Image (cartoon, rainbow, N blue to C red):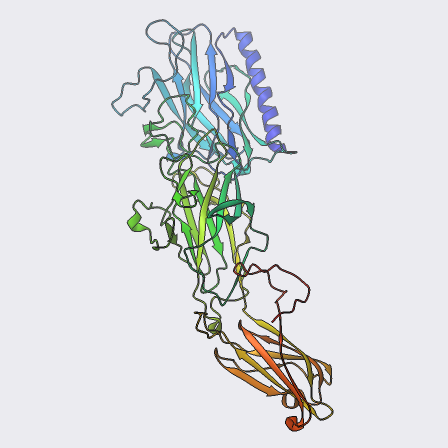
Length: 575
């Protein structure tokens, strides 16, 4: 920024000296520069449209023929207007001429096209800008008017807003423009340094909780969603909502207005600028698509499938559509658009249309394109996320302990930060921060046997049943159990073989923990384990007692969304 300021200062001095020179030579033709608008630009954007620069020139003609000058505009960020032919770009300088009937100076009338398209252009002259780094130049600009005034308008200038120095203390960064004149004819410019845009973040992304089928005002906690591995997830249930929020009313934009964008000076609030056909062999001003929003799921565990709604939700049962104020549509793949329900794989039990994402290398991506939006309101776009799994704990499906993440950003993301003839418009840098999305925890039961002994002629029989096989439709599970002994002569932990659903394993303290007396905790890697202990003297001749083990809730895991149990750190016992 410091270097640019030095350049700005030096060029300002040059412009002032040129102004004095014109005064000495009695040149009466002068121009005053103003910024037509000063829009908010997205700091994530590489191809952000700046406000138009208008030069209002007045004076009395002193030459029989028009003289020419070169006008160059320097910015404090790379100029990224699309290149149409060589270094000629979509940025144009339009010259409004004095009409045949005496009257005020006029700007180009609509429709405006470049010469060669068959449409008369007698009222305008258009000069394409040559882009070089942080500047755009207009060569051979006529500077002697046909009457007493002329209006020059510079439009369709895009800049890499991500390269604009950030603001301080909540003040947005500013796109600065400096106008310089050179060539055969010198042209005094009043107010040569302008602000043509303010730069601030355009997007906030959050993962929202579900409330009555819609996104609630509460975000999912920092640890994300937690699910038990042994419970299959069905796609009919919304698990969370991806919320894309614009930080100012015009952060989300259409590609272009349905009514056309050929009126010079109109504020469009779209990704496209002033659309001009036959511009140096191409079309100037037209973007490739509207604002696109991307959700990137990373580190997706094997066995977890992700489904997203094909549009943002209006309510729990209704997707937004073209008639909605806020509407964004899923595109599959990113260059195509889902146009009919036939293309959407929707289950019979879903309330809204959802589509499954493809996971490649643990990454799944969804992209939606904005098709309807209001330039006067700050909007949220909420997209539903559903998950499906087929629980198979015995084969670690879905994989336990794999923390998946999700990040939201504008799209497409690009590393092309300068003017290009092939890179898409719009394009963005990725400033997203991944946040925890979902993780699966092992299903286990913790059993406490309060008294176990193999001393003083006593022994303890220990039994654990895997009751996940039942007539109630419970998913059968299997897993090992690990005995942990605490007390006199406690042996190391002992792990059993896999305990199948519907079976019982037994052991004796004399076998597993000889000469031990104390308590034992068995950790079984399946739900619905239940235990029984039987303490007796040898042969149970004189004294015997049996009891059921106690179940200790697993306080090291987050609460299951299915159980409603609160997360805690203290020991809680139950049968």
